[in-house]
Image (spheres, rainbow, N blue to C red):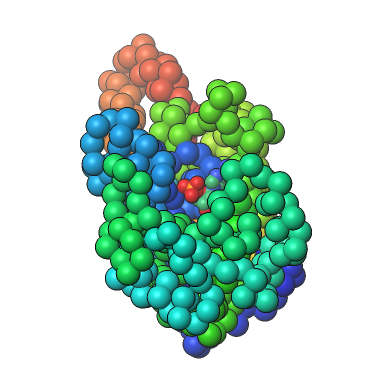
Length: 468
Ligand code: AMP
Ligand code: ZN
């Protein structure tokens, strides 16, 4: 398996610290509102990477934090006149609902900064004791000049960063160097705070992730991921903190997802080009959103538009209709031994799985992996015939659903199942009407089904239906 490592800027063989074990840390959302369509991308992508690793036999410990101390959370709480906990509890619940909707496997751990204060204070103390951090007026800063490798992830040079930051007007005069960043901030009036050796205050954002990764996974982890906007400064600072405090390399592989843009522009509230995931799922189901995201390579930017979402919906439907047809075949056929021709076809279908794995082994190319599922679907549509054995249908179904499961694509959806009951009832009614030679009624039911987007086909095995 090869993965593109942002740290080395090349694709590398994936080798874990401990055999068959993966320690993975995902930077989660800041919980002050509903997640937006862009946030859905890391959810889906890193869940898919995890699922693929599990399929390959790795035991994955998956840690995704919730950032629950932040200026934006405090602002929102003040606007609503409630405590910050009310805001964070509410939006953590909503984010979990969205993750479930997207068919994201629950994380092994979902730590929160507010619950890790003693560990956060401990790591800051270590950094101060080791000479990597200093205190000024109750706040503590990281001394970037003390860490010679600062800039290695983002490829930035510390002198350039200092020069760039010196021109800014909002410069914090307590810092020794403008590139230094805050580990502990002393409180301002009306802000939530915790006791510490330096002041009543709260931690900076970057230290939270260094601490949670250490607490839940250890000093060195296999894989650290997030959106590409986090490379600098967030992940650069995490490396500086963790490696200085622990005296060990932090993460072996750094993976970053590209952005979702809207109409080829960065999402922006002021331009009205901002969509929460809930805005989108009011129009299309969650599984279409997941499928849409998987249609692009995770490192490339992807553009969100209604047309592309519709195209993704049609693609997904092709897979679902194929699965439904095979299920119909299985329910209405016999034969538990493959014919020699079928045995040959089953053997040939292994090529689709091989192509799928080849794509996923190459830095998780989900777009090509989906193309191999479509090839499989086409193959099944051509070869599962009324005369095929039940066993052959089962083999095709197993092959396709196995690949879909790895990508977290549901081939039978709960909602569709309720719809299915209604459709099946109408079909039974139509069959009864035909038997009673009430053709007017049978036609009327066919039209009703057509209005529901269902096409029916009379076959020797019975009525077969699919969505248009
Ligand atoms: P935030 O809540 O802004 O900290 O973001 C949570 C996660 O979503 C991070 O991994 C971000 O990098 C990622 N993210 C934010 N905006 C986008 C976007 N438009 N496209 C893709 N990923 C994004
Ligand atoms: Zn983080």
